[in-house]
Image (cartoon, one colour):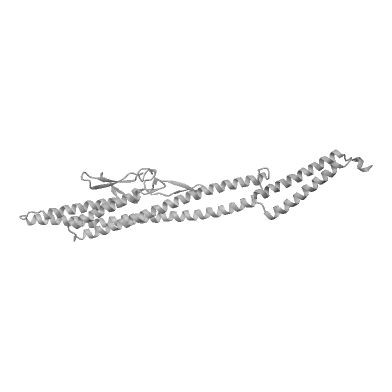
Length: 339
């Protein structure tokens, strides 16, 4: 059987070919305009899904790296603050060492108390450091200053109270730094610096400072008693007050080991925070490598090869023009052309 080619079927084939050539030309034109192979999910459904999944993963990585940067900034601020408190604590210990040797008179010791008060105020101020508007040593209680100075009825420093989350409470603040990995960045003030409130709770460097201040005031008081002994005081009375003064100096001397323990505790916490910083740096580096690889994959899937695309575009343009010419010639032909 011989198939007859009609003018209608020929015209349909020519229209189809012309439309296909135009579609190829239009697609390549759009790709050159946007610089992307895929501008619609219909262009390549499989690759489109791959690009969507890769971009979703890139967004997650961006969130993790942002968390790492925030945590790193807080850690840096925290370690700097602890370094400052260590320096101030060392100064307080030096003052205690001098005061304990018994060579200072009453006025000298009053000057030491004045400097200790300034150290307490500056250390409490630094222990109330904020990061991004949140107090960093208050545990999860980030909106209340973790430390307040307590004063007696005479307006003198009597205690340093901790107001943050206790160590046995839900004090940890965590952020996700990679898939399913959450990093705790904070320490509580009670762990790092302790407290010494008027209710008798005493620990850490804050407790040492209050103990030192109280012992200095006791020593000053005993020196005043010694100065005010009446001329007819007995030798026993003189020996008694001298013994009490010696006991005060011994008490001050006994605080030196406590200062060392508190300073070492703060240094140990700083070392721990430094280890966390190193961990964050390694995690950040790994995420950056993953991000670069993913961006390369997305680029390969999505971005055009400009040289090849230009060549293909010219080819498609010629093909489209040729199909239009054939179609126009075909439409202009009739039987009259052969009579």
